[in-house]
Structure formats: C-alpha cells, structure tokens
Image (cartoon, rainbow, N blue to C red; front, side):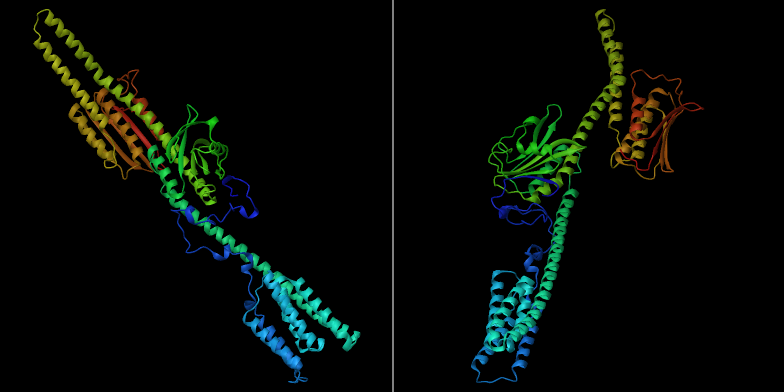
Length: 595
C-alpha cells in the first residue's frame, strides 16, 4: 500500500484476486478508469518491466549452444572413422537419427525455462542419446559425446541438479549394459570417467544457470525501478500541470468551482461532493455536489463511514465495499474520501463515489491525495480573505460614517436650527425671506461637503494610476476647494506592489486632509523619493503646528495612519516644523516589501 492512501476493502477471494496497490501507479491503466487529463510522457508501456521474470532469461540460441552440438557430431565422426562400415545398418540408422535431431535442435533451440514442456524435451533428448550409445557400443560408442551438450542444456534450463540426475541415470544404464562385454572393472572405470566428466558439465552449467537467473532478476528489478520512476514522473508532471492551474483567485466561489472542475476531469466518478466545516455549528456543509441525490449537512459526530475515516487519517481513504449507509449517495459501491486541511486543522472533505465496485485504483487515490493539500490551502485562503474583506468592509463603513458625521452631521444640525428659526419667525408674522436665504446657503454648503467627502472616498490608487498621479490630482482638488497652494514633488523610480501603494496613499491622503481641515496653512507640499532601499514620503504644511491643534477624542485619523504604517512595517513620524507647520513622514523599507 502506498504511503498516502488508506485502503479498506474486502479480502480477495483467492491469491490471484488481489490487485496491487503500490507502484507502478498506472499498472492498471486503460478502459474506463484511464486518467483523462494526465500527461503521458512515454510512447508506450515498458513491456519488459511487466513481463514475467522468465521472459528475461535468454534462449539457447542467444547462449550459442549449437557449437557444442556440432562439436559432438564432429567428435562422433572422428571416433567412428576407423571402424565405420555401411553394412552396419544399426549404426547407420542411429547416425541418421542423431544427425537429423541435432540439425533440428540447432535450428529450433530449447528455451531456458524450467517448464514441463522444456523438461520433457530434455529428458527425451537424454533418452535418445542413451539409446544411441547402448545400440552402438556402450562407452565405446562415438555418440557418447552427445551427453555433453544435453547436460549443458539441462543445467541451463533447470539447474545443475537436473543435469546431474540425468547424467547419473544414463551412466548407470550404460555401465550396466557394458559389464557383460567388457568386464566389471573396465565398465566401472569407463563409467566413473564419464560420470566425472558429466558431473563437471552439470556443475558448470548449474553455476551458469544461477548466474543467468540472478542477472535476469537484477535486470527485472532495474526495469521495474525504471518503470516506477517513469510512472511517478508521469503522475508528478500531471500534478505539476494541475498545480500551475490552481486557482490564484481569493474568491471562494472561484476556488470551489476550480476544485470540482479539476476532480471531474482527472478522476472518473458517478458522484462528487465537497464539504466545508462550519466552526459555529460543527457541521460539514455541502458546498459543491455532483450526482448526489440527497444533499444534506452532516454533524461531525454522525459522518458517513468514508468521511469519518478520512477525518481520522491524513491519507486518502479508498473503500471498495460500500453499503447504503457508508457513502454520501445511494447506490454507491466504491469511493475515495480525503480530508481538506490547512494550518494543521481540518476544514472540509472531498468525496468521490462510483456505482461500480472497486472502480477506483491506486492511481486515482494518488491523484486525489496530491490535490487535497493545495486545494485545502486555496480554500482556506479564500475563506480567510472573505473574513478579512468583511472586516475591512465593516471598517470602511465605520470610517465613512465618521467622515459623514464629522463633516455633514454638524451642517445638518445647523440646517435643523435654521428651519426651526424660520418656523418661529413665520409664526410671529416676521419676514421669512432672510431666514430662507441663509437656509439655502447652509444647504449648498452641506451639498458641497458631501461632494467633497465622496470625492475623497473615491480617489484611489489603481493599476493604471500610480501614487504620484493620484496625489497630484487630489492636491489640485484640495487647492480648488480650500485655496491652499499645493505642490506634488514625488519622484519615485518604480511602483511598489498595488496593495502596498494603496495603503501608502491612505496615509498620505489622511495627512493632506488633516492639514486642510486643521492646520490653517497657506502652502502644502507632498514630496517623496527612493534612496538606499527605502521609500520616504513627506507631507509638509506651513500652518499653526501640532500644539495649536487639538484632536477630538473620537477622531481616529491618526490612529488609522499608525495602524496602516504598522501593517506595512513602515515608520510614521509626525512632528512640528521649527519655522511653523507640521511634517508627516512615512519611511518604508523596500526590501521584500509585501502586504
């Protein structure tokens, strides 16, 4: 079992029924379970890596046994040359049979396989050799040399033991027949001589058999290792392609849609569901489903079997024997279940089910396991961003409310007083026209304040408008409405990240507005430059200075500036200028600046 998959399945009915769950990952590739979007980087499957071990052992033809057979024939010709007579029909018939058989096995060599068919052919060949020797003079027969190549074949195919057994049987039979004609002493001596020779053949061929077998085994191991590495490379490449296309969006809906889309294209299934945990209710809420008939949330204490096992394990859980209560969909018989985790905490589940038993293999489990970690992080990031965005929206609403209260609230209150005065004047029969004129002026001032406030809120740094352009435009607005002479002397070589630039602008804008409202200045300058890996921005006015202006207790402008500077890891300094006025400076280190 692979390290990243927990497998829960029925015990196989037989030894041959168990399916491998380790590498190679795509040993069972093909059919309906093929990976649709995986990138296959090899032209074909490594056939040698999948073949049985015996197929890696060379044949007799490649081992070149035929020279030894021809040498045996040549030796037989030399030994029979002196006493050869064409009238010896038995000898001639035996020679023809042996010559024909030798030609046949040279053209169709025996394979080195310890199979029944190979063993039968070797035994037949040894019986044929023994019969030829017994028919043509026992140990004096010219065909006795045929025992040597047969012994070599037996040793190479089945080991030295079989070669020795065949040699012993033939030596015993030939020696027993040779005793009446040559005497016991001579027969035993000749038998011992050939027994030693054939024993040496059996020993050396047995060693060769073992060496060839070990070499083939090592070759098979090497091929298996290469096959596993190739399969691992194929899967990792596919996962890399998926990781490169993972959602970069921080929108939760986009991330969930991308998650489901990837799973649907990479793993074939009949039902799919993505669950996210609700921290308040401890429920697993279905946020995306496909092919699930009964969509319902599950309490953590009442999860189906597959989700429960996934919650208890950091690995992908594979179930091949689902019952009706084990899965998330009715009719499912197999499934893959994985937990989504981020920052060490469980945040949800992914479930894929099939109506077919044992539909998911190890490769599909590996794919799901490889996707759960990046998907978990992406989903967690999107949820965190949603919370941050909600908090930011709440903070922005509070800021807008304070802005309207500070600049519009008092004006509206004054309008109310003017309306009351007009009512009293009208009730007393006095002249209402002057009061209404003053009221009209107050309304105009309120409208102007609202427009200015909305303009201040809308002025923002964008991808197409940098800090310098934004500050220049805003200072022009300030000069038009307040009469303060403004100047923008920002000389920034390059832009910082957009989010950082927006935070800087909020600090600069707050400093400009404070100077406009409270400093009683006639000149206002915003300057900035980059030097020594630092960005330094100054907002300087020639007003009354800090000591002459008292901030209201509920004012949060300076507090907001300090909080933004802290988030940027920048230094914010506010001081009075000796010649009069106030200077607000922001110093930001540029090395590794981020938000």
